[in-house]
Structure formats: structure tokens, C-alpha cells
Image (cartoon, rainbow, N blue to C red; front, side, top):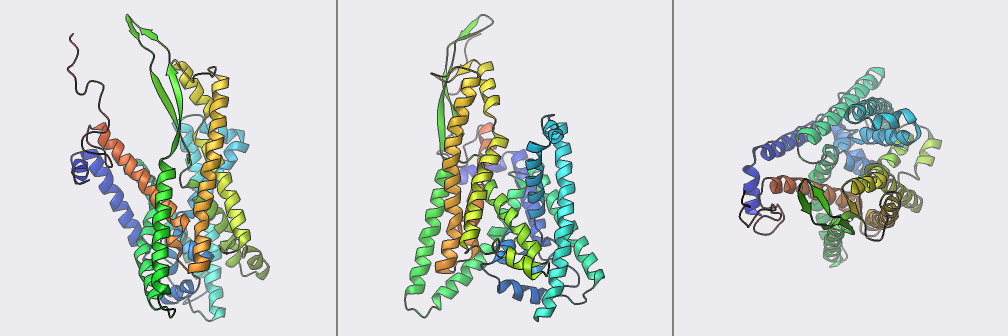
Length: 448
């Protein structure tokens, strides 16, 4: 591990990418503590502290604690994620968007521009409802807003929308010039930053339990559950199905190349941490609008989506996780294209005819393993409800938070390792010596 960290410093491009990523995340964490003008931060913290285990607690987790500060980043990256979901769903329905998506880099830029406009629109709507919600807290005895009125609403909407646009820009810059996925890393940074304080509060609460040794036993049980969940996440995120691929003999010029055997790896969880993030974002939006609208009818209807301990919430969340697991897998993996690439490269799956039959076989296998991956995601994400219900554990140690943290960490480490292997250095998680050697490694070059 020490040698691998030293090797990172020997690659200028990788070193610059990592430092750039850390700098952007530091800027994000500084912005979390910049409060919207006209808001009493202390009163807002009291409101959020009373909402642990509810919708506001979950929203505060995904915003990295920005909601309890009511900072300019209080909306977090969620409007961007919601807009991305809507645009991807419309891509399947609207032929024009589907055509743009297939036009290569130029088309994807136009789709991303549409997503940005959608993000700004959602941020404006959510910012307006938040301003109304903050003013309604005054009638409940919490003087969160210093000077309510349309001026406050305009400033709040402007601040929150600008903050969301800036976070969206940070995520895009990290993805393009840093290491890892910028959107996922921003959520990752928010959850990890709040974990130490949540752990200290839980341990102090368990230690002050009046049930004798039950507090220590609960802490030990929580530790075992967290370790077991992390181990399960690592196992399933690394697991994949290998489809054997045989390459026929081929002649290039005067050389005859022997047929080689290889395999096509299909991950059990192709979609990664996207399904729980998408599902949480979708469920947060109507609940946020309902809770901040001031309408009792909408609040009663939104209570179903804002209570993670409600069985109806868990059922809806599970269905959405399964749906987005299949949906996102179909977006990022095209069996027809993979089959065509195998056919063009002279490869085939033993016992399967190239072309259409190969695409159908790959799609059938992918559907089965995606179903297993969706079940795994659902089970892991249901852990928060059990922990909150029986152990009063914060969201940060639930399945959704751990899944995002571990999944993003594995993806980032994998990208770092690919940079190291490209430069013939030892992999970040590999044993001593390079994990992958060139074809000529260990033997002299052929005579010319």
C-alpha cells in the first residue's frame, strides 16, 4: 500500500487529478457553511435535530449537512440528479432526444445542456418552496427567518439556485479534470464528513443507556452489522459473470494468428450506486414540495414518501430501486452493440451463433444477473429501516449511506489503479509487483 501511494506521486497527470479533486471537494465543504442571508442558523439546526429519522434527516444527509446550516448548498446535487433522471426517461420516449444521444460527443453535449436547464428550473421551484417553508416555521415557534417577505424569498431562491448551479459545475469539473465521478464524490464527501459526529453521538447515547450493558451490546451489534454490510457490498460490487468467448484463427498480412480464448465479464451490479441515489431523489422531491407547501392535504399525502420506517415507503423505494437497476443497465450496456463488436473482431460464444442470437443470449444472461443485483441493492438499502426502527441508528450507518460510500470508494480506487497499471506500476490493491504485464514482459524481444 505504501509503495502504491508512492507510485501515485510519480505520475504527474494522476497526481494533478487527485489534487484537483481534493481541492474541489474542499471548496464544496467550505460552501456548506455559508448560510443563506436572513436565516437564523441556530434555529434551523434545532429544527433539523428534531427531524432525525425523517425526510428532513435523509435530505440533510444527501446535502452533506448543508440543510441544517441552511447554506447556499442546501439543495445539494439532488436537482441535477432529478433532471438527469427526467432527461434519460424522455430519451426513451422522445425520438429527438434519442437521436441527439446517438450523435456522439456533440449530441451528448446538447443533452447535457438540456439537463442543466432542467436543473436550474427544478432548483428555482424547490428554492421557492423552501423559502415558504422557512417562513411557516415562524408560526410553529421557530424564528428561523429574521425578516420574512418577498425580498427574503427572492434572495433565498437566488442563493439556492446559484449554489446548485455551482455544485453542478464542480461535479462536472471533477469528472472531466479529476478522478472518479464528480456527482457521486460530492454525495460521498457529504456523507463521510458527517459520519464522525454521528458516530460520537450514537456512542455517547448508547453509553448513557440505563439498561445496564445493553448500550455496549448495541454498539457492538451495530459495528458487526456495519462490517458485514461493507463486506457484502465489496463482494457484490466486485462480482461478475464470465461469458466464454472464442476467437477464430485470422490472417493479417503474411502472419497467421491462432485463435484465443477470452471471456466477457458482466458485472452483477452494472448500475452501481445509481439506483438508490435516483430512487431517493425521486422520493425526496414530492415530499419536499408537500412539506414546504403549507397545505395539510399535501403534507398528509407526502408523509408516505417521507417516513423511511413506513412499510409503504419501503415498498415504493424497493420497486424504484429495482426499476432503476434495470433502466440504468439498459442505458449503459447495449447487448446488440457488444454482439456486433464480437462479430467484427472474429469472436463468438461457443454454442451460440454470432449476431442476433449472441445479442439475445447476452441480454438473457444480463437480465438474470441484473435481477440478482437489484435484489442485493434492495436488501442493502432496507437495512436503514431496520436499524432506525430497532436501534435508533443515524442514516449515515444505514445501507444506503454505506452503499454510496463503499461503492464510490471502490470506483475511485479502481480508476486510480487503472492509471497505475497503464504506467506499469503496481496496482493500488494488488500484491507486490505489477498485476498486469505486457506481452513482452519477462522475455527478450523477438529478433528482427
